Length: 313
Length: 294
Image (cartoon, rainbow over all chains, first blue to last red; front, side, top):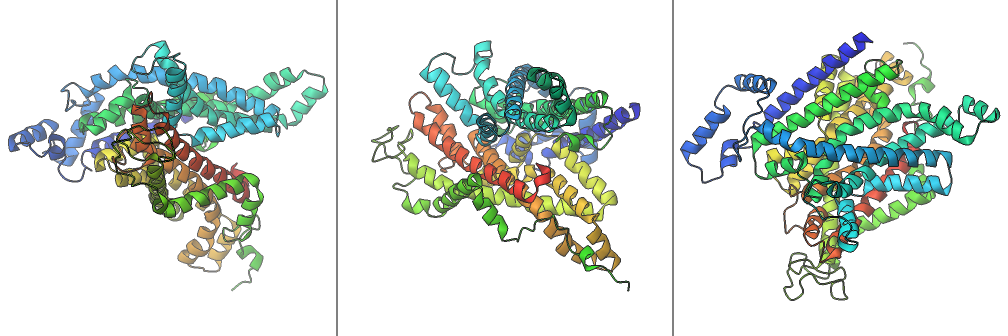
């Protein structure tokens, strides 16, 4: 077990290093002179020179990377080119709003996904199963931003129950969280259904039924727990990808989170901020995945190194 | 040379070849995939011929009918500067098809190349390539696509390239997995034993046998590519106005959500119908070609 955790930490560390190289390389992959692109065509030679100095782009590439990495390790992700504020402060200011949205979305996704999955499995090959799985396929086909707009049309414009957008209060949270939750629930409901259908066909379930147990006890005490192992993993992995999914939803609802910041920083070509956000999201993603894998290995000791992702997906 | 049982050299019987004529028939026999195929054929027809039948120029503003409701003159209404939504939607179909073909081709060719190389060469090449893929997988798809657009600059072509590249890591991993499983099968081992060249094994034994898995994933990838490119356009990082692209139209529609319901409704509905049909078709293909993965 200890060895597994150490190996998982080591491979996570390599990926983290890789992400730091990717985010560092971002600015160097821009075709043409990134400084000219950031400052615009009308910039004077002095301005160009000053910014190049400030970003350290006149040094050798390897020196630049180690300088960048040592800065990152000390919590210095550079300075936003547009606002002049430290990139990390800008990110940390927006991050809580994104976490709040992603967590609420995840909570709803789990409630909706597991309920639909269990119902579909219990009533396999009936209308309930067909409807639940059609909704799940529909969920992966409908653009998140369209679902968001439809919900605004219905609950804000037509019924006037909820505010349109812009705030971060509870009432502002409802629609973006529902949008996110409904879409994220599709994977959970499919996986729950698949797990439950498999488990319900096992002999011990037949035995449980044969000895006269009620259907509720069979479903929730005997089948549910065993069917949940892959679902728990996918939920863990979903937490990280939800952080990516919030980007578009934040735009629809003008939610002041990390996604909105990412979009505006790309539009204004504020590269230090773009680099910082990519690095930050990548690090969060890797840490959450690593944590999920380790927790998973503690729950299910059969798991071995190298099997985790494939086994989970 | 020792005698080799010809049965060992032929692909395993449970593998269904992509070339087998029965696939289209099997898809046709399943009502869900039949309807989705019909819808997709219609979408392709509209994409090719739609612009000729469009009643209006998709970029021409009719200032006398701004935000006009759907009517006989403008079937799906007009937008904020009086452009005909129906004509824009028809032209947008072609853009969407282009997105599907271009983005998915980038993913398919590069991903297959990386995956097959990784599995076939093995050793350090495999380790390095897969580590790079792991790193790229650690960044959510849409964020990755946004990063690439940040590098290349916002435009429809760059959005397609970005979405295509963002899909590569998952695809490469999948191809690698399929190649490895075929590579270790008895008939490939036997071919190698009788001295078949590596190139022949790759082209005539491995490629045809991983195609069914790749076809399933490629179909599902079309849906993802259409959604992600539309999302990039929606947030202003893809197609730029006045290009009649469905994501851009939705973004414009969002601004008039209280006055003109039709602006955001129809482009979203179009995206959903196309992606839903592609996904149903992909699921049906998976059931036929690759039942174990379901």
